[in-house]
Length: 188
Image (cartoon, rainbow, N blue to C red; front, side, top):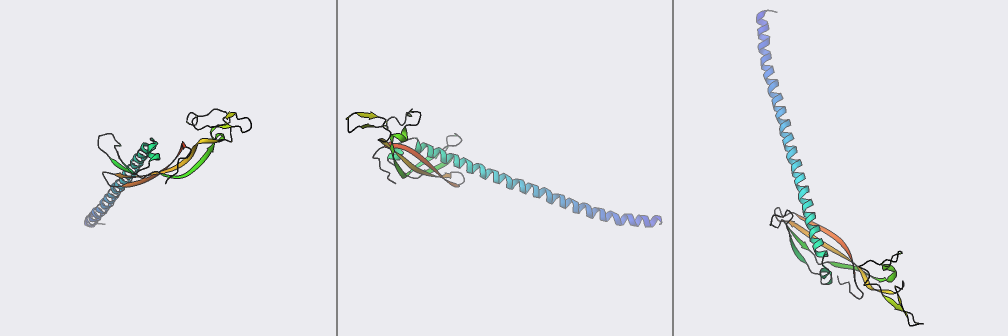
């Protein structure tokens, strides 16, 4: 091969090298753009999950606020509660707590209140009744088969939480059981 032929071959290869370099540069750019797009998508997913978990925490806080007062069960009403989740003085969420719904009442006997150990819990002491023996006229304290002075009621509480920044909504349900004086109606 002559010197002139070698120079022509080298000139032809310089164009091919430039073309391959440009193709590789485009492929690397596409990989970089794809990685950026994927990380942005993942960041959005994580942000949405965090917002959902915050809304659920706000809903739980509102439900616990309703459950903390027996008056909310004796006179149930729908409540709207502002929740400041990050304590900055601005309500981040608004929880609309539906009127608590009673769905079951069970009459309790003393046996339901007195465990095998014989130690009555402080909450149940006011519920334990005594019974009068028909033959002797003597009152028998803690008679197991005697009707207690309490009912066990089951309630459902639902809260719909709205994120004041985004408008996103989450609905949460919670069950609650409570002792009420005998004769208390289960008014849904």
